[in-house]
Length: 255
Length: 329
Image (cartoon, rainbow over all chains, first blue to last red; front, top):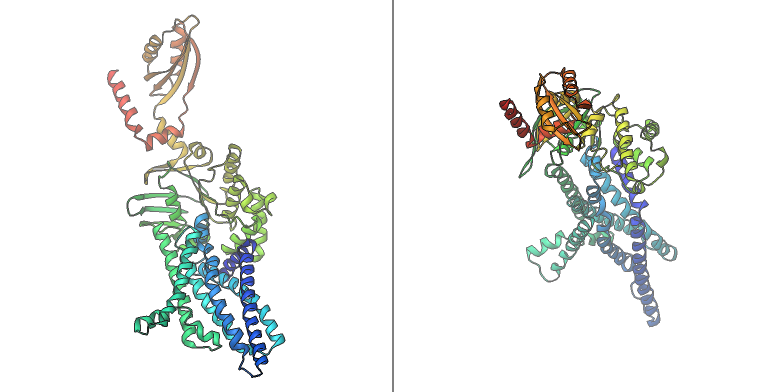
């Protein structure tokens, strides 16, 4: 466990010493800020409209603001996650520092956990920026905070799964760009798989749509904690980290 | 300290290391010598548990590199060919990271960092970014990293490659000074390095073990017969090289005379003799014939020749030549 912490600390340092972390944080804050402003603007516009007509429309800040916002965050995540994970192993392989890790008394699992956790923490710190926007909602309105928390949990689980896959892909190459591009492709695919459910209801379409990471976020965005979806993400995390461990081991036998 | 038995590493197409066996005792500095691509790095990677051997075994400090790799890793310090540095880290920070990676306790860490910085003369770059260091400093930080946890065994892969002559000397001195506390294996393709730093040498070529012996033994082995350089001169060009050569060959004990170098009125011969007591006879012969004896000294046999003899196809040629000469006589 101590070793996980050693790796974790080192990875976080290199995220926050280089511009990577700040760039991601800034990009995320700006994009999320735009969505927040946009969705809230629409919400306010509809409120005014209903007042002008003199008839009350059912309006719910959780349903109409928080839920679409969280769904948007999960999609923005898909785009930013490759940038978080692409360097994790590719960089170590390129500079040869992987030899230092591999010849130190520390297990592969500890290295992988440390690296993956550091990426999860970076993502979590990106998410924490959104709390600033939500604070305004709580100041001027009365949203329910429990669905919001579940939504955050869902975002973290979803990101954890994609980060695990990204970590795995990063072990496959020395080239960060290749790792990033491949991770982006996989993330995108895991997103659009869901689209087939729009026009097809056959079993294969249901299976495909089930594999999409977006499908499983649906319930979280509503504020529902569905164990089926949580287990899907956790399984994906384990699967990704398992592949990473296998890949690291095969690295030794191959190179 | 290190025992290697029949160590083999095979890849899909070729065998990088082919049944190598050798032994290194505690406190020794061993030079691992071979041309580029001989399998030095592969062997070192197997010793450091980075690569698993295809067959054969290696033990470091009594632990098997495959079965007890964790124990081995605790006891080795490894400097790969390119020092494993994180460019975005500062020197002291990096050494602390490596120290904690190797399992040093927090209380010890600061002390060890100070100690290795002092030992490797990198105290003045302690707060610099590793990415900004010069090649010489990076190499020394690499060495500092390898000794941070005071390992029993140090494995250094070409520790002086890419350094300028002054840095090479400094690094060699540093390595020599470390020998007392650590057992050291260093790989190199530079021969003088082995002559200067190592006590023992392991020569490999194309993945095969060629020789393993102490440096002085190897030099003797290559010498076999003593060989002398004789420079003969004459004031008025009377010393015809051919004549001198015939005269020298007549001295008892001389087995072979080769004209090495001829200038206007002096010529240099290499004289090989079976026993070591022909110098006086040679000098007398030259002087009595009326020539000047400008120089008479033993031809130093460098490891270079040993190396070429042992690794190259050169071996066949001189042996044949010697046989022919002997036959003529």
